[in-house]
Every structure is written in C-alpha cells, then in structure tokens.
Image 1 (cartoon, rainbow over the protein chains, first blue to last red):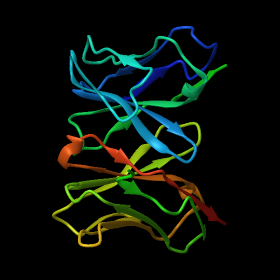
Image 2 (image 1 turned 180 degrees about the vertical axis):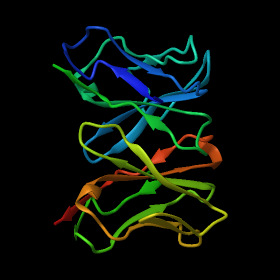
Image 3 (image 1 turned 120 degrees about the vertical axis):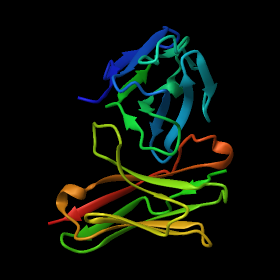
Length: 113
Length: 113
C-alpha cells in the first residue's frame, strides 16, 4: 500500500530537548516536504526536498532542520524546541513538486511545555 | 501576504444540497490548483485539481471551476453527503513557488442530515 508514515503520532516534550520526527514514503517519490498546521493559519511549509541531499527552506523554517540522506526518508529535527513550535506536523511526498497530487502522512501532534 | 485565500472559515449545508467552497488567489503566475480534504486525526487527502488551461474539471460529485480573470476558483459538491463533512484546503502552485504548494487556511464544511 502506497503510504507516507510519520512517527511518533503524538509527542509531549520539554523546552530545549532535541527531538526528531521521522517520515518515510514507499512510493519512490523524489519530492518531500514538511508542513505545520495551526488554528486559523492553515498549512504552512517548513522545509522541502527536491531529491537526495537537496533541501531548501519553506515559509516557516526557523527552529527546524531537515536531512535527506535517502530517497525514502525525510526527518524533521527540532534542535531546541520552544512552546511556539507546539503544532500539528505533516510530512508529504509527490513524484515531482506542485503539478501532481501530494500524499500526506497522518500527522504528528507535538506539544512543547 | 496571503497568496491563497479561503475567506469562509466554515460552511453548513443540508444533506442533498449543493456545497460551494470558494478560493481566491493573488499570484497570477499560479497555473495549477488543487483541493484537499482533511478529516480530524488524519492527513490531508487529494480531492481534485485543475490546470490553468481549463476552466472546469469534474470528478463524480466534485467539480472545480476556475475563473482566471477573477483569480477565483470554487469547488462544488453535488449532492452533499454527511461523509463530506471535513476541512477543505485550496492549494496553488506555479511561478516563483517553484512547484511548491501554497495552501489556503481551509474551510470547515458541515453537512447536516
């Protein structure tokens, strides 16, 4: 089954404690991205990757890092989480950017206290 | 500045009637538009798309209309069903977005039995 898998689904952490949210897709897609969803703000792109070792900033990259060492994986790293990063995060993949549908993971609800 | 706008945060419709969800955009370079549907606790799923060379695309009960001169698109659902109750996101790509999807804030549709 074609899917995008994120882990964990839920996470509560403390300010400053580094964390990683994993994302993996099994569709051999080149393009992957991370979004955050906040009430009243919709989906905003954090980072995206056009292919292995190619990443770039989206609209709200501050406080986040990503890496793309393998085609299937695109982890999101919060080196020093802060309460304003409390949000619902989605990973997405698509064969190419923009002109095809993107497949989304089920989301990771992160709370930073 | 918000390039994709969904000005109605919510919409309530009776089962069997037509639901019309609206979306406006400001960037004339956008040339591909998509609608995503999102249920609680799930990731967004692709619903329907339209290229700027068309003014209408239909898929079953769902039809998307594009008015380029007005920079406006709409999603029509006929007939509406209770299972259509979800948040609907409009997204656009093209131009300097480099193929990245730019999302609106979403409209929550409630279809009442």
